[in-house]
Length: 146
Image (cartoon, rainbow, N blue to C red):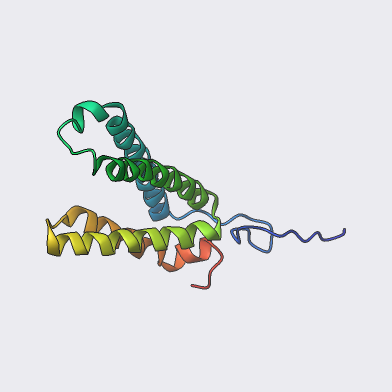
């Protein structure tokens, strides 16, 4: 039998052909990513639909920047859904993007906690997601050395 070599975007397949079992904690991170992706898209879309009602009192100088921020929210929501799919399938790129995204959210939440309002829930959630993604069995699922 001739052995075939494939270039994969993931290392989630063991050498004997058996697929690694997805860790339970990773399933929770995936569910959180899907929920936040959907919620981000819905909330951003709501602001676009009700632009006149919500932004009627805002000056026209600021409105384009605010709309760009809202459209960026839709893009971020779509990226969160794509990363959740990548985490589900065991793609290594999704692990890296999830680590970068959680770290960026954590840094922004810490800055906002100091400057404006402490959002303890978001801080704890991002720290928990980073912790789960660095667990040895999760790293092994993505083909990284534990």
